Structure formats: structure tokens, C-alpha cells
Image 1 (cartoon, rainbow, N blue to C red):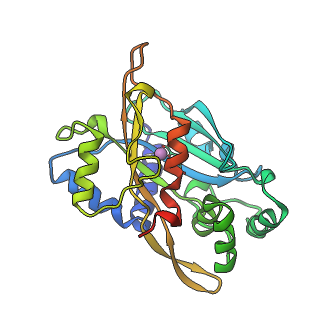
Image 2: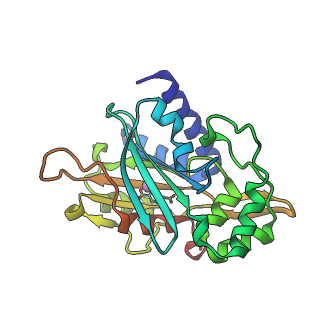
Image 3: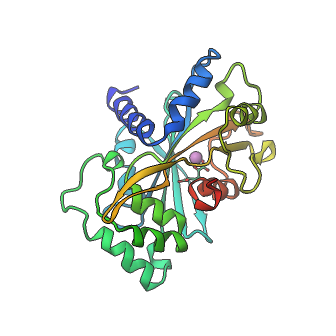
Length: 267
Ligand code: OOG
Ligand code: NI
């Protein structure tokens, strides 16, 4: 495992724990049981734009030897995604999605263009840890969230890991996603129940669940407001008929996992 990718993943984790108060608590909960946590994948969001799209965010991962593994289309949410995987089984998969700006009406595009117009000519590298590259008003954030929760999340947070995902297969004291979910609920975590607490099944070789993103303070042009931040995901993979564990993602499940940052799920 190259040092560079390890240090990038470490930096992403440190940023993620800062904006996701659940991360350390869930880690502690599992490590107290003697678990050693492995990540199934880390996910990123962006806007479709030649400067900052999926392919641009993927650069440091491709440089580290990751390869494209699959493409996913989300018609209703107007999203496109790719996943990347590495020959080293110790490295998490990477899931990167982008909002298809061309598919939105002019008013939404104009609000997003106000953000994209602020992107510096010399982009920070790597982009995936750059944070927010624009100022945004809370009014624009709210207007976006009515049209696309994804767009408003991106407007508020910019470039960072949207979630880390615990690889449940590697847990020794927990045999099922149900058991992990039960443990989390007892500890007071709210789970994303859109489409059921568990998305997918052994038949599609992947089961996933996630927490509801906690609200975090975000500075807007007109003051600080509490908005949904990051969430934590849990994935259990099953072997395919051809042998090894399924390596991809399931569009129907992912569609609901995206909703972990929706305001409708906030208590
Ligand atoms: C990504 C949602 C999809 C998965 O594992 O299916 C996903 C997001 O919320 O940005 O992570
Ligand atoms: Ni995910």
C-alpha cells in the first residue's frame, strides 16, 4: 500500500470525523468490542463540470493504481456515479457521483453557477480534500434543497468524504447487518429507513444501511446555520456465483442511501 494513498485516506478520515460527530462514537462502540474496523468504501459528491467532475475527483485514486469498476445512473435524482477499486484488498473502494447540471431548469443552474464561478483557476490538489471553494447564502442553500437535496449538500460542504463505510464482513463479533443496526439503534443512532433500514439483499450480493446525517454548523454568507452533514454507512457483501465477493454497487439501493443527508429524515 503506497504511503501517499494511505496518507490521503488518513486526511479524509480526519476531516470526516471533524464534520461527523457520529464517526468517533461508532468507531469507539466497535473497538470497545475488540473490532478492527476496515472500510468498504469512501464516497464523494460533486457537480458535473469539466473542472471538478467525477473524472477530476478520481485523479489521485487513479494515480495510486485504482481502476474504474462500474457506472451507475440515477434518473430521478439526476446523478451519475462511478466506482473505483484497487488490487490491494486493504484499500477501500471509492464511489464518486456528480449532479447532472444540464438536466436542471435555468433557475437551479444559475444558483449553482454562482458557486462554480467562484472556483479558483488554480484548483487545489487533491480536490477531494479541498472543502468548499465558494461562499453561499442560506437562502440559496434552501432554494437548492427544495430542488435537489444533493445540490444543497454540495453547496454547503464542497469537497470532502461524504461518508465512510464499515465493511461488515470483517467484523468478528457481529454476524449480520441487522445485528449491527440493532446495536446502533440501542446506542441512540437514527438509521436511514428510506426503502427499509436494510437496502439490498443476498440476491443482489450487497446489503447496506446508513445513519441519518447529523446536523452540523455551517457558515453561510448570512450567518451560521445547522444543516445535515455526513453520515456513516455499513455494507455486507456476498459471493457471486463466479466466486469472490461482489465488488460493485446496486443502483436501487444507492438511490436510497443518497437520502441519508435529506432534511426529511432529520428528527
Ligand atoms: C452516495 C450514496 C450511494 C452507496 O454505497 O450505494 C452510496 C452519496 O450519498 O453520496 O454511497
Ligand atoms: Ni456508500
